[in-house]
Amino acid sequence: MDFKAIEARGLVLLGHGKMGGALLSGWLRQGLNPQAVQVITPHPSEALKATGVRIGGPVPSDAAVAVVAVKPQKMAGALPQLAPLGGGRTLFVSVAAGIRLAAYEAVLGAGTPVVRAMPNTPAAIGQGITPIIGNASASEADLTLAEGLLSAVGQVVRLDAESQMDAVTAVSGSGPAYVFHLIETLAAAGVAEGLSPELALTLARATVAGAGALAMQSPDDPAQLRINVTSPGGTTAAALAVLMEAETGFPGLLNRAVHAAAERGRELGK
Ligand SMILES: NC(=O)C1=CN([C@@H]2O[C@H](COP(=O)(O)OP(=O)(O)OC[C@H]3O[C@@H](n4cnc5c(N)ncnc54)[C@H](O)[C@@H]3O)[C@@H](O)[C@H]2O)C=CC1
Ligand SMILES: O=C(O)[C@@H]1CCC=N1
Image 1: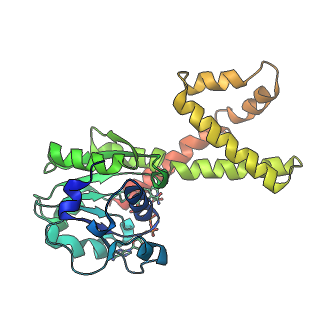
Image 2: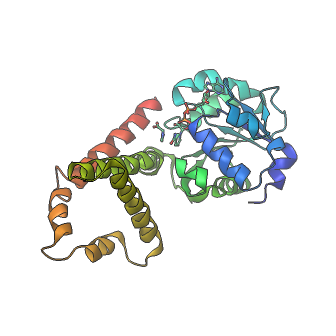
Image 3: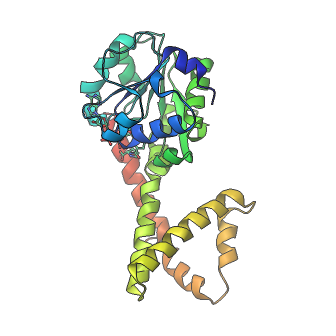
């Protein structure tokens, strides 16, 4: 992305935790000038200080963008710090799960352009995916700016309606954790079959990474890629008989997990 428009007026980042940190790493890696970034976070880490961004201090009154990356439960205490930027000049981009556009408007003023975005932690290496949705005050130019900022750290998808946000949060926002747990449990299963923990983890990590890359690059859909691995009467078929069982296998398990995540998003928004 060309960060010039943002660098001219500045970017404020509220909350430098796992997600704010992943986004900031991605932007700095893509060439955003650290001096154009002001981070507001209670306990700045040494790693943050080493980036050369501005930490704390008065909020620049004319920032181009304010990125909100605090926990939903901390929002009521944290967001009012940015209220002076509300009203129209500054585009707000919030990554918080659950919190509705109307809640930002209530604190920042109805005319404030707000974009809800749901990135995921692969943003830290430029491989995130971020669905976005704007409020009525967010212009096409605002959406393009948010899209540019987030596409610096991966793909961006525009949603049709805010009501899709809890489901996308449950699929791609939380999704990396499901995949990391798959790596952990695949490795543990390898250990149970007699492999050393190191070898099992090496195999599990490379298998998930390789399969993910193939799923992105191949013209075949995931179902065909699965079939390509599965010799009739072979080892994969034996495993898939367990994994594809409707209730106890992946289908039932992931349905229940994704539903639980989406429901939690709905609760956080209340
Ligand atoms: N971790 C993830 O994979 C993703 C997280 N999110 C969203 O990102 C947001 C942050 O989540 P995480 O980074 O995981 O949490 P975190 O706890 O790692 O980071 C939150 C940060 O906010 C700071 N903070 C707390 N009170 C503050 C205040 N009053 N003013 C300024 N900063 C304050 C904390 O010190 C911390 O650095 C949440 O709303 C979450 O829903 C969205 C997508 C993915
Ligand atoms: O766990 C959470 O609530 C956040 C939102 C998506 C990923 N992490």
